[in-house]
Image 1 (tube, one colour):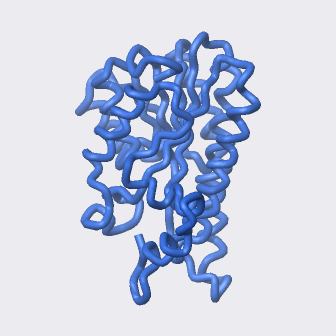
Image 2 (spheres, rainbow, N blue to C red):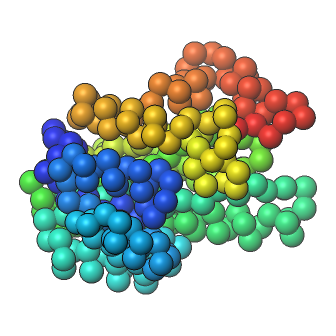
Length: 257
């Protein structure tokens, strides 16, 4: 990772006690990186530390700015050579915008974790990362940043914002040692949404992780990490078949992705 290598880095992944984050953390650990896993639940952090010796853990709640600041202090005190931040923390919930009482609190919480959490995490580490000779910020957007799933308006919006934030930070930080890479997942079989682990339309987690690691290794200068299955969503507008993509995501009488 970094600008050239997939190994030899020190990586902090907040939001990685399960799902995509944990799978990526373990894969990067296997590739010879020092990995710090972050999450809200102390029991999961203890379990990960016990099952995977050598992986460090820190409690962090991406919805809480004070927690982010405290976690950053702990991580940097223990790992002063940290050079990779992966802003994995995220939540996804269905919303019904016909009735504000049913969606407003969920929408605000989604913005707080997915967008403000990303902004605050970058803010907590960006000065440190600029002092490293080779550093990377990996943001995590979604195929739904580029084509909407009807059931999750705010999730879609926050991931679109993360995409444009990534594009903008890449321009601003071009005069530093910090590279900005955007990971763009499709639907993957994780617990991000209840029952999604069994969703046969979603990509198996192991397959996704292996393809991501392969892409990082094969194209270390890529601006976006796009597994093949996300390109249907990512490039609908560019191909000129955006309406077909939206219809496929949101079939009549179905629940989309």
